[in-house]
Length: 106
Image (tube, rainbow, N blue to C red):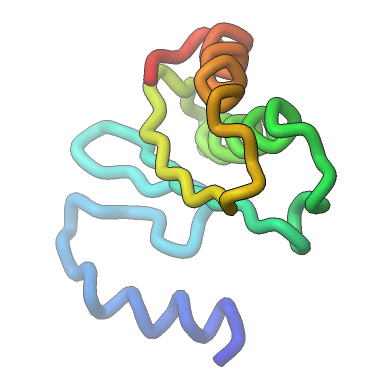
């Protein structure tokens, strides 16, 4: 199933009138814009990309999605699945940098 057909099939699962924007970059619910983009190795970045660049790209995608709908990102939720070869000790600093850059709280 192609992306847009898949999005259309999901709309029936969210008939709540308070939820608007499925298929857009962000979803508006209860006065909040919520974005949840993910990025994947081999699609959005290469295996040798620096972790800080990967995390910054992830934050940028979501901040941009909210801005595209007229909002300003204030908080971020972070879900991470990293391969074993990634130095996870550098993850905290990469997240801290992106939060500071965009002035958002995790």
